[in-house]
Amino acid sequence: MKKIIVDFKPGAYESFSRLAADKRLGGLARKFYQELFDFPPDEWGRLRTEFGKNTFVSDNHMPFIIKVVAEERDGELYLYVTEFSLRRG
Image 1 (spheres, rainbow, N blue to C red):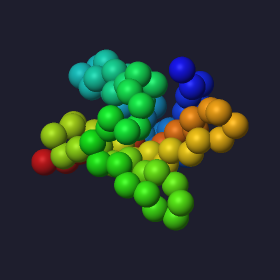
Image 2: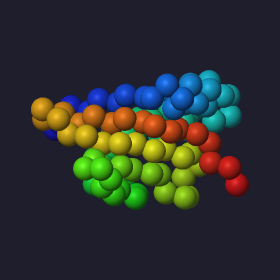
Image 3: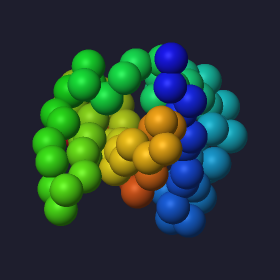
Image 4: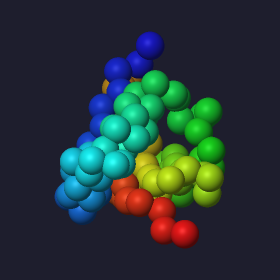
């Protein structure tokens, strides 16, 4: 199994931190964060290649918008989270 490293970009981390601290949504936000480790990108919803890198955007049925750029380097998988926010309506 590859080592997976998750790196939040500043705006995504701030948004995730607010959601994780929310009494109503915190557990769900943390669950979806944990699933970034549990499932390889090829099993995620909408995976496409842009600029030579794999990008992932969460499916519309998920309560959060999660955007990730996945890059494999030196036998490790780096997941750069560029957005983690609550999906509105």
